[in-house]
Amino acid sequence: MSGVRHTVPVDVHLIAVRDGEQGPEVLLSRRAGDVYASGLWHAPSGHVERETVVEAVVRETLEETGLVVDPGDVRAAVVVHHRPPGGGRERVGFFFEVRRWQGAPRVVEPDKCDAVQWFPIAALPEPMVAYCRAGLDAYRAGAPVALHFHAPDDPIAHDPRVGRLRLLHGPGAADPGPEPDVRDFAERAVGRVTAWTDVSWARESSRVWGVRGAAGGGWFVKVHQNERFHRREAAALRGWVPGLGGAGPRLVAADPELRAVVVTAVEGRSLHGMVLTGAQERAVFEAIGALAARIHASPLPETAYDPAPVGAYDRMGRHLDAARPLLEPGDEERVRSAVAAAQGCGPLAPVVTHGDLQLRNLLLGADGVVRFVDVERSELQPRVRDFVRILDRFDGREDLATAFFTGYGRPLSGAEEAHLVASAALDSVSGIAFGTRTGDPELVERGRRTLARLRAGSTWPFHRPQGAPR
Image 1 (cartoon, rainbow, N blue to C red):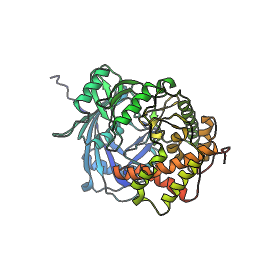
Image 2: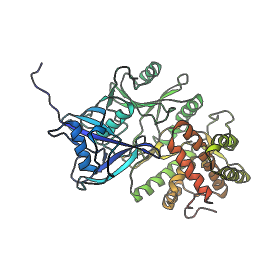
Image 3: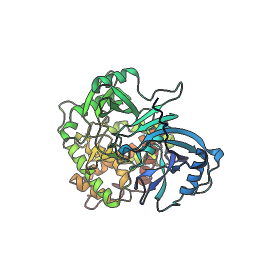
Image 4: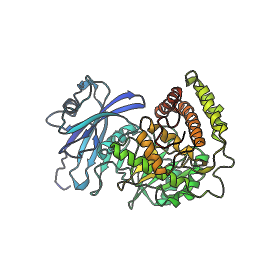
């Protein structure tokens, strides 16, 4: 033994949880002013003084948010042993869950915080303090203890490419990594893996891990929910994605028996939940439009991803049958009318599509470049398929629609408009049914918003960008 006693600071973090429209939500504050990690989102927190950790979290909660918490309502969530970047001093953080309080959250210390806001715990904002994000990720995984030791040159902000979180589960708890054959597949591809971080979306069918290699480097391992998605993603990663010069992930290995792939990490942070200024949003949507144009200009493959793929309109009856009990009167007729109008315009030529072009699959790099991930739904389809899930972002934001189509290089034709409205209508009923069945409120709410616009008599794009044809 060295004879040197090891001491560390102790801090406390509040995980205030409420039920929201998109599932459980957590309260975060944005640090501001001359403080550590200014501009980053973080849970209300602070240092322990001459008090218990429970007394400390009650005090810090009141001082930072104005919420009054009864000590009896404080529940243990996770303990994180943390080392900051730059070789800073280690510390131990106690994260506590609280579901009852008095008062409404507000900014109490404007010199240290400029915003408090609720966020879906499955869609946390960026930029966020990596230490806090590690604690929340451990909490979601059900781990009682976690290690989060930064390398000296790591960023303070959370970066999905930097997987420093290690979960320590209790007796009998499930290992956060995949089954042994998937582990073996990944290690054959990248060498020995020292850390697995579950980065799946909060739905049963999503199975994705970030991995760190013993010699450094990071990758993602994905197990597809069915053979069709695996075939599509592997075909896209081998086919059109490399032609876009680093705009998407690179395929490292694929195993059709396991329906698994290993891919490289992509530069950037997810645009889902990112807080941007109006000018930044316009620049981002122009870049997304330009990226979509590059994808759609990719050479058509010699063979289709799927033999004789089923057309979207051929699935209308199935989608309506599944969603009918969840629809309002007249919704089914509006969907059928939109599809009939599109069919009356004739078919559109197929192009290479991403298949699921939405903000959670788009990353914004530090260089300002927008890149993409997740091409398991890529198919040869009309180009409007890739506009369906971006469309929702244009509601009330004509400037974003204009920016997007400026980047894309042209507006849509009248026939493309009609097909886009029909595709959005079908996507809405499909999302409502699927989201209700799988517990994904985000899909349900997006579908309801689309139907509400159709109910109001709105057409593409619900706020038409300047210069778009009628």
